[in-house]
Length: 279
Image (cartoon, rainbow, N blue to C red; front, side, top):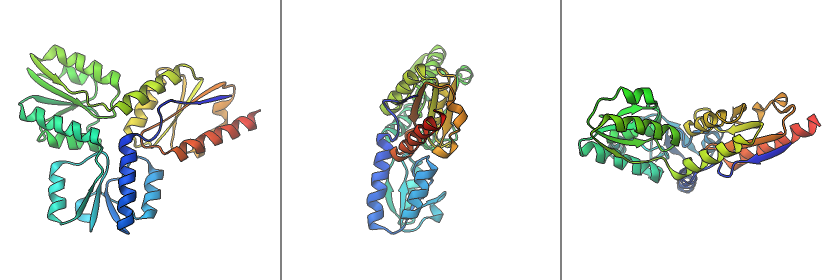
């Protein structure tokens, strides 16, 4: 059985940066409060909780120092942090910051702001706030068809599928007299999706590793499903099943932007052990 890993898999720049910022802050503070989980990976969140990074959902629950995760926050939340005199440790991904700036710019220039993404995702919630809560979030061509505006400004959740973004933009172009598009999908997302697609095309089975609550991992799973018949989304090696690998020759592995290397390595070792048992 041949096991191959996608060329681009695992931690992205924004996540590595957030983890590094958290590590530095924890050297100075015994306890820090993370506004929401630092990244969408339960195993990493659990490890950091033991180090002193406590997850809270509101600023009211935080004391001394608060960490802003890579997904970013609305501008009003920065004001709340300042009012409480908390030390603000900002780990917002630079790509996310850029998308926030574009959302603000488009709103101020009187565009009807469209955000391509998941409206329940924390990153998107922050983008909406930067557009003064006047943005429309869509995630499909059908939703794009329902938009009626002559002057449209478009940004994307940084972890969106490139193909989905392009198809939605193509629909919006038919609608507006004027359209301004900022492709805010980060390079790491594009590369990760492309390498997962290529690997899935040449694999009998794909394993996608990452948090079940991770939007970019779910996107990888959906992309792989288009090119490979057997695709499984797992968080840890414990979810692997021996019968998945019966008669399989080529196994492909990819992982979301919030998935650490040690989890990927654990899964690879476990698959090698399963192969040994089968043969």
